[in-house]
Image (cartoon, rainbow, N blue to C red):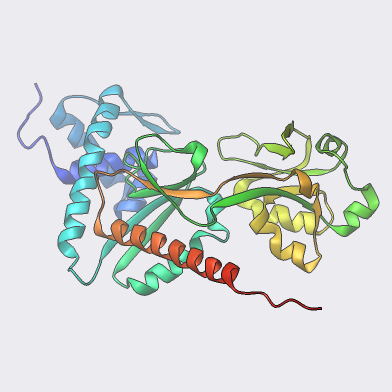
Length: 321
């Protein structure tokens, strides 16, 4: 029979959840600043005290048992709440401090999130930020994160979400002038099947969908990519397009500098599809001080940007005769 004295220890629970999140002892040990053997021993002692196995160990991976999974689902939110309470206690009224942990899609790491983080850190010198880049939709609470950033179609229904970055974005196509001079310009999305296409693949294994829209007509094309790269290598895909290796599809804001410089030319611009921009999302129940400050910063930055654009649009124009 298990010894139930001191069954619940916050340190043991935190270690167990870290192993589940990292899917291994070595990665969890690195995160916790411990040796893998110490982490393994802690988990073994924890299982002994509970009298039930919590992890399935193989030579390649570590996964929770049914009992371990149920424990994570119930305990992870409580640890998040405890961390939020401790951070709130540590933060004075005038100075926010503590860790802000974000789980974000790689698409926002190119030109949307970094400048925001830079300005936020400058205004909150006592805040630390950890960013986990993951293109899969994850439970941010179970992953030990305060908030996530995803695009609208991938958001759960029971979260609060605020826009971060551009309200609308477009999937744009581009190629180098040299490539188009040699291969010709496609006059319809279906003609892309006859071109060298540079495709991007999500970490889930799915290819980024090429969907086009014009005057109510929607066309989906799945060309065989001569080059296929992970979305984390989107910058390399754009560089390959600049060097003439084919047509690339990427966020318009990623391609804009090269379109302006003439290094790339737009392909089928009348067909570029538009969609909602990214959103910062979080559970309403837990809001530690660093997250509350970041949400206020994001909404404030967005309002300032909109006010600036409104002022520019409202300026009187001077006509010429």
